[in-house]
Length: 131
Image 1: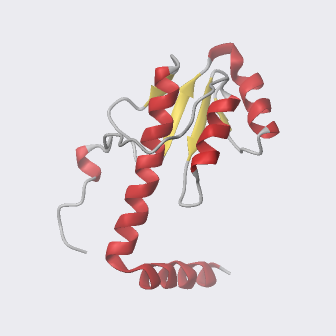
Image 2 (image 1 turned 60 degrees about the horizontal axis):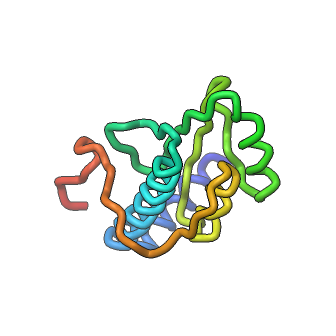
Protein backbone atom coordinates (compact mmCIF):
# COMPACT_ATOMS: atom_id res chain seq x y z
CA UNK A 1 0.00 0.00 0.00
CA UNK A 2 2.86 2.42 0.80
CA UNK A 3 4.57 1.62 -2.49
CA UNK A 4 1.43 2.60 -4.41
CA UNK A 5 1.45 6.05 -2.78
CA UNK A 6 5.11 6.52 -3.69
CA UNK A 7 4.47 5.47 -7.29
CA UNK A 8 1.47 7.82 -7.57
CA UNK A 9 3.50 10.73 -6.16
CA UNK A 10 6.29 10.09 -8.65
CA UNK A 11 3.82 9.91 -11.55
CA UNK A 12 2.31 13.22 -10.40
CA UNK A 13 5.75 14.83 -10.45
CA UNK A 14 6.68 13.36 -13.84
CA UNK A 15 3.34 14.31 -15.37
CA UNK A 16 3.55 17.95 -14.27
CA UNK A 17 7.32 18.37 -14.61
CA UNK A 18 9.44 20.91 -12.73
CA UNK A 19 7.73 24.01 -14.12
CA UNK A 20 4.27 22.53 -13.61
CA UNK A 21 5.03 21.66 -9.98
CA UNK A 22 6.41 25.16 -9.43
CA UNK A 23 3.27 26.72 -10.94
CA UNK A 24 1.01 24.55 -8.77
CA UNK A 25 2.98 25.48 -5.64
CA UNK A 26 2.81 29.19 -6.50
CA UNK A 27 -0.97 29.03 -7.05
CA UNK A 28 -1.46 27.25 -3.71
CA UNK A 29 0.66 29.81 -1.89
CA UNK A 30 -1.11 32.77 -3.55
CA UNK A 31 -4.49 31.36 -2.50
CA UNK A 32 -3.24 30.88 1.06
CA UNK A 33 -1.88 34.45 1.10
CA UNK A 34 -5.22 35.76 -0.25
CA UNK A 35 -7.12 33.84 2.43
CA UNK A 36 -4.82 35.17 5.16
CA UNK A 37 -5.16 38.72 3.86
CA UNK A 38 -8.96 38.53 3.99
CA UNK A 39 -8.90 37.14 7.53
CA UNK A 40 -6.43 39.81 8.68
CA UNK A 41 -8.47 42.60 7.08
CA UNK A 42 -11.43 41.37 9.14
CA UNK A 43 -9.36 41.65 12.31
CA UNK A 44 -8.29 38.05 12.84
CA UNK A 45 -4.77 37.20 14.02
CA UNK A 46 -3.21 34.91 11.41
CA UNK A 47 -0.08 32.92 12.23
CA UNK A 48 2.73 32.43 11.42
CA UNK A 49 3.66 36.07 10.99
CA UNK A 50 7.07 35.31 9.50
CA UNK A 51 5.64 33.58 6.42
CA UNK A 52 3.90 30.39 5.38
CA UNK A 53 3.40 28.17 2.37
CA UNK A 54 -0.01 26.45 2.41
CA UNK A 55 -0.97 26.32 6.10
CA UNK A 56 -2.05 29.02 8.53
CA UNK A 57 -3.64 29.14 11.97
CA UNK A 58 -6.17 31.74 13.02
CA UNK A 59 -6.79 32.94 16.58
CA UNK A 60 -10.56 33.01 17.12
CA UNK A 61 -10.81 32.85 20.92
CA UNK A 62 -14.17 31.63 22.19
CA UNK A 63 -15.60 31.57 18.63
CA UNK A 64 -13.75 28.37 17.74
CA UNK A 65 -16.71 25.97 17.98
CA UNK A 66 -19.05 28.35 16.14
CA UNK A 67 -16.56 28.90 13.30
CA UNK A 68 -15.89 25.15 12.98
CA UNK A 69 -19.64 24.44 12.83
CA UNK A 70 -20.16 27.18 10.27
CA UNK A 71 -17.32 25.71 8.20
CA UNK A 72 -18.98 22.28 8.24
CA UNK A 73 -22.23 23.94 7.13
CA UNK A 74 -20.26 25.45 4.21
CA UNK A 75 -18.78 22.03 3.33
CA UNK A 76 -15.32 23.11 4.53
CA UNK A 77 -13.07 20.95 6.71
CA UNK A 78 -11.04 23.04 9.17
CA UNK A 79 -9.25 21.79 12.28
CA UNK A 80 -9.19 22.90 15.89
CA UNK A 81 -5.75 23.86 17.19
CA UNK A 82 -5.91 23.95 20.96
CA UNK A 83 -9.07 25.60 22.25
CA UNK A 84 -8.86 29.04 20.62
CA UNK A 85 -7.28 28.58 17.19
CA UNK A 86 -8.25 27.09 13.85
CA UNK A 87 -5.86 25.51 11.37
CA UNK A 88 -6.36 25.85 7.62
CA UNK A 89 -4.39 24.08 4.89
CA UNK A 90 -5.02 24.69 1.19
CA UNK A 91 -4.16 22.58 -1.84
CA UNK A 92 -4.46 22.71 -5.62
CA UNK A 93 -8.20 21.93 -5.57
CA UNK A 94 -9.11 25.24 -3.86
CA UNK A 95 -11.12 27.62 -6.03
CA UNK A 96 -12.18 31.24 -5.38
CA UNK A 97 -15.57 29.97 -4.17
CA UNK A 98 -13.75 27.84 -1.59
CA UNK A 99 -11.98 30.91 -0.18
CA UNK A 100 -15.32 32.71 -0.02
CA UNK A 101 -16.84 29.77 1.89
CA UNK A 102 -13.97 29.81 4.40
CA UNK A 103 -14.39 33.55 4.90
CA UNK A 104 -18.14 33.05 5.32
CA UNK A 105 -17.45 30.48 8.07
CA UNK A 106 -15.53 33.24 9.86
CA UNK A 107 -18.42 35.68 9.37
CA UNK A 108 -16.72 37.57 6.54
CA UNK A 109 -18.61 38.58 3.40
CA UNK A 110 -15.86 38.96 0.81
CA UNK A 111 -15.21 38.04 -2.82
CA UNK A 112 -11.95 36.30 -3.67
CA UNK A 113 -11.13 38.65 -6.55
CA UNK A 114 -8.08 38.47 -8.79
CA UNK A 115 -5.95 41.33 -7.49
CA UNK A 116 -2.36 40.27 -6.81
CA UNK A 117 -1.29 39.46 -3.27
CA UNK A 118 2.33 39.52 -2.13
CA UNK A 119 4.18 36.27 -1.53
CA UNK A 120 4.58 35.50 2.15
CA UNK A 121 7.06 32.65 1.93
CA UNK A 122 9.86 32.49 4.49
CA UNK A 123 13.25 32.99 2.82
CA UNK A 124 14.26 29.48 3.92
CA UNK A 125 11.52 27.99 1.71
CA UNK A 126 12.49 29.81 -1.48
CA UNK A 127 14.33 27.48 -3.83
CA UNK A 128 17.66 28.81 -5.02
CA UNK A 129 18.88 25.69 -6.82
CA UNK A 130 17.61 24.21 -10.10
CA UNK A 131 15.27 21.21 -10.05
